Every structure is written in C-alpha cells, then in structure tokens.
Amino acid sequence: MASIRDVARAAGVSPATVSRTFTTPDLINAQTQQRVLEVARQLNYRPPRLRKHRIGTEVKSGNGRPSGSSSVHDAIGFQFFTATSAPFDTIAANLFYATVFAGAQAEASSLGLHLLVHTTNRHVMAREIPKMIRDQAIGGMLLVGTADPEVLETFAGHVPNIILVDNRDETGKYECVLSDGFHGAYTATRYLLELGHRRIGFYLSEAGVPTFQDRLHGYLSALFEAGIRPDFDMVFGRAPSIEEGRPEVARVLASSTRPTAIISSNDAAAHSVLRLAREVGLKVPEDLSLIGFDDIELSSHSDPTLTTIRVDKEAMGRLAVRILQARLHRQDGGSVSSTPVSVQHLIPVHLIIRESCSTARF
Image (cartoon, rainbow, N blue to C red):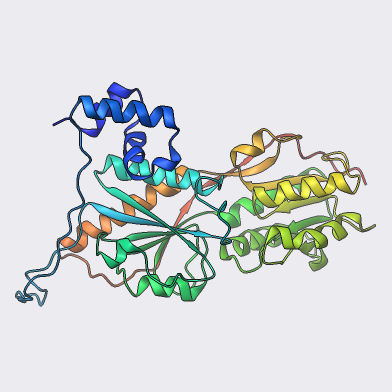
C-alpha cells in the first residue's frame, strides 16, 4: 500500500498537507483537497486508523504496573484555547496559532502520528470533555494558548500526558513550550533606547496572560539597566481584550505626556495601536515608534511595516509534538512515570527591524 509520502510526492504537496486533507480539511483549499484525494484514490492510500489499546484484565506485573494495559501510540490531541466564543475565533483565523498548528501537524505526520483537534473557550469549559478524551483515543495532548487554571485542571484530570504550548506553567506541574518573552521585550526596549527614546510605553493588552507578563518584565529590566525609573503610567491596556482596551489606548495616545515609543505585547495589539494612532492624528514612525511581538504575516505587509520580535511559531508546534511523543515512548517502556514534570522549553526570538521605528525627536 502507498505511504503518505508517496501521495505527497505524486500530488506535489507536503506530507503535512496530505495529513491535513484527511484530518482537518477546513484548513486546505478545495482544489488541493481534490488533487490529494484523487491521488490517494489512484494509489489506494488509506490514512492509518486510530489504534486504541484499552485496559483489559488488570494483572499486575512484578513492577506493580498492570501487565494487560498499554497506551495509545498513534494519536495525540491539539487543544486550542480561543479568546472568545465567536464563530470566527478559530485556529485557521489566528495568524499566530495557525502557524503553531502547521508545525505540530507537520511533525506529527513525520512521526506517523494522528493529530486530533479540538477548540474550547479558554475561560469556560464546555459541558462535555472532548470526544477524543471520552473515547480514550489519544495518549496525550498539547494545550495550546492561555487558559484559566480551572480549565487546565479539567483536562489534566482526564489526560495524564500534557504539554503546554505558549503558556508558562505557574503551577509546577507541566512541561511547556514557549518563546523567550523576557529576552524579546528586553531586546526591543534596548533598541528603542539606542534610538534615543526615554518615554517608552508598554501595551500589555491582557494582564492575566503569563507570557505577556514575561514580556513586561523584560521591558522593565531594560529600563532599570539603563538607569531609567519605570513610569507605571506608561504600562497600559490591562483590559480583558484588545477591543475592550481601545478607549484607554486612545487616551494614552492623545495625552500631552504620551510615550514617544510603544512596545506591544503582541503584533495584534501593535496593529490596534497603529490604527488608533492614525485616528488621533499621529504618524508612525514620525510621531510614534512602535514595536510588536510574534512577527505574524500581516506585520511584513502593514503600512508602515512593523518592527517586531520574531517567534518561530512553527518550531514551537514541532518541538511540542516531539516532547510529547518522547514522553509517551518513555512511559510505554516503563522508564518514566506519568507524573507531570515542570520544565520550560524556551524558543529563541529575534528582533526584526522594519519601518515603524525612528530616532526620538522630542
């Protein structure tokens, strides 16, 4: 029987695209889907079925483990936490997490794993846990994005192997994969200081996001190191969402003591600042320098193009899958317990200089 790579080669796509055609077709355009499916039919390719290994009669071996039990080997979950319950708040529409997902899907495909996807509001747990958990169809999960502690605990109560992605573990329970937010914001602040800026603001956008707190601490550290006492009036936008924080940002931009430069906790917040600056008559970068964080695709096409901190989002997804797979294999071999381990895997970040910053003029 043909392999996934045979289909990919014949269809002129990547193995990840073949896998997505069968698992998440909503992320693949209709023309590509049709080509992949036609090639799969011609080559008699069928995606591997999920193999579930359920616990049979519990007979304990000499090491105390049930000898009749085994774990799922070929399927893992990708649980995406949305900021809202709106129908448009999906992985495909999120310029950051769509790339994280693409990396995870590609790595899962290369390892012969199925990646099952589910979406939940990060603040409210659904009435029922995802079907992939109820059916015991997965050996572990990636919990992607920030979620309230109660939501995380619900998943942890049903799935012993969990990796947090883009969410710093504050409980000491989990392995997590995240970008080096502290270093990124520190680097961005140093760059603005070198351009002569001294009134540098930080747009937090959401106060309760741990990764944004890391970025805030990097900004504060750079100011302290430069001998500048932080003005906490320059840290703004602590509303639950970017949209709800717009009035405060508009007031900051219209103030006579406004910052000459702003670092935003992510690119989405930076683009919001860019729009609001235009509304109050400020030009970027002539009147206001602006730096984002994440380097989503839009940032290289905005007007002006956005200086930002680049996060290798695809690498985050790939690394998270590799870590989870290694954990499952070690556990199956009896060399590690399923007790969660608190380890932070930091993805390096880089400053990308574009058009939205200039030297301080006042």
